[in-house]
Image (cartoon, rainbow, N blue to C red; front, side):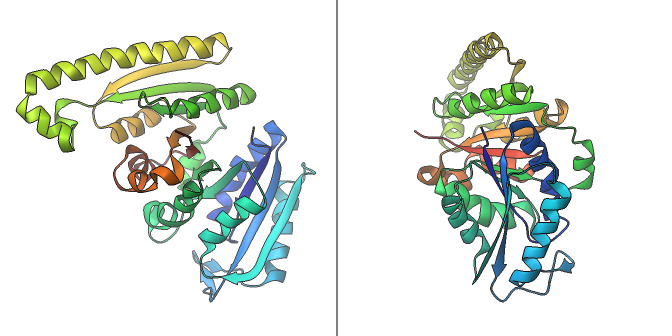
Length: 300
């Protein structure tokens, strides 16, 4: 579980906010860590208000310093500078995920345009499109980072689809290794939060739709109860909740109320890329929350 972690760094203090999360996983799981810097073609001399690493020597010195300062306890740390200038850093990180074969990529969500424009629109999107490597997105807000106290609780958002149960199976095993708890949430829409065809049907058949949503809530409770019993029997601390409302909003609210360390979302990778980034719940959660998000690729 996370035997090899890839941590891309651009030299900025913002990007370095992902380091503590990587350090903790490395210590608890005995993971190998590869620090990566990709030299950008025609890069600006300043990025995020700081001097930008634009040559191999500076980048190599920087990564070596980070390795010594932050990962001195670990013998399994490597530094890799991609010296051939590239115009798309995100594409290069994706390529390195195939070349270096990590089983987790840790990224800090930062940039002028914010999470949606910088990360969701490039690096994370392309890594997810690759469909093989989980991505842990860290938000660099100081207030949120100050609250961070380790991987204590994983909030796993489920929708009842069998495919997404893979993210729960993965998280349960990880939580057991880290001695963490998992909290399951499933959100059932209300009449007012339905959209698209469901909203149109609800307008035509309000009584039938309301009854159907009530049945969905009952089914959701039974579904989560089954998951609770399964993971508790395996010795994992586990809680669950069913909420009614707009799914993304309720998941974000639950993460705040339960003080979750990480939100776990299953994604379909390349086969579901357009749906994922245009209309599904996951990107809405990614864009609204300040809690770290683990995007786990699942298979149909």
